[in-house]
Length: 516
Image (cartoon, rainbow, N blue to C red):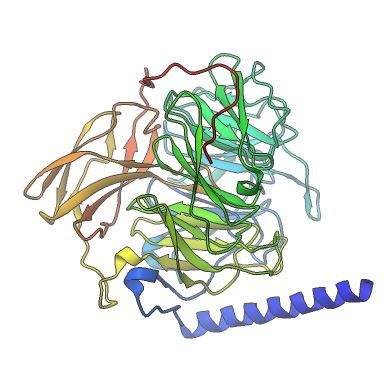
């Protein structure tokens, strides 16, 4: 038996080295993953070196990308360094790498933009043990300031948290839940920097690993744990209250599954334990779960990215947790209008555990990371260009442009958007992403109603703060062909008295109906 296992590990190691060499060769000669139908399948750019393994990726309010997770050689841990990338310089440039001077191991933390100032809060993480990562939680928080590119220590959490999730609430506070050693209660970081432990919300029953949490239409937190699929509502006011709900089908969850709120109150949950996918609708008094088409294969450690047209992109994953078994490198896109997936072209290398995918302002997707630990360490990245960027001849589609737009707005405000075309058919908002471990902690999509007069588009933001929790959003306009502009980044301000009114009375207790 030992000989068989050794032979298999040796074969995997050889395959990993071979794939790594292919990636290096692709980057060296600039090969792209072409498609006979770019407007159907999309196109991948060349594999390019990255300063570290991008376990964590978050867009700053000025459009740059903060990544961290390992040392430059892919060694596990972010005790020493982090990187800031300017996409305008392309994948071959624009990197500023910095020393982490906080004395905090931010490996496997969670991170989120603070809506009151645009700084990025980094919550918890592991412990640096002198020669590597000690896999226990710390109670530190750190704040990244994009203006100075500095990372500094801030107030401590009430619990150590390793693999936690952080969510901006409708009132601008930050809800922090889960993480190893923080299983018992969530906590809230108030805007004054103080932490309030939610002693009235007992979360011991739920898996600590990156809970899938979303701001619900009524302002509560709806979520489910990644292991069991056990659902709940948490009211984060005061000392907190928790309402347990039913279980999701076990085959549609798993720590390596993806999730995306593709419309207000509607969540696509996919991958992980199977190829299956479901839609969770939380717009009523109880969650309603329905099946949608399965993906082309099982994708454990799949990343989900919402695109400017409201579709959802799946990248990365394999059939076996973090092993090179039935790897799926394709860019697979789910269309909420049809409930169907389409598998397009494939990236250069497997993106498994510790990989990431993040929407950029030009409508492309940065796909990076994987490794530490894994079959191989991906200190590299690729750019995927979705089908909407191409015309039927395979060339670049003509894109509308936003000439001028507000840089900030209140909830429910009217936006006057100057464009270069009279052919605008859609205005959309996507909250800028913050991704790690197959979880995009912040992305959410909203179609914005509008009227147009020549090249002036007047759009009206939703009046309910829970539909657009405060923070930084991509603002896109799309033409009649469905081609998006480059986004303008807009700050939706904190509402001191947020409207979270809904047209139902929440039911206390009980299990959810699941017509699946």
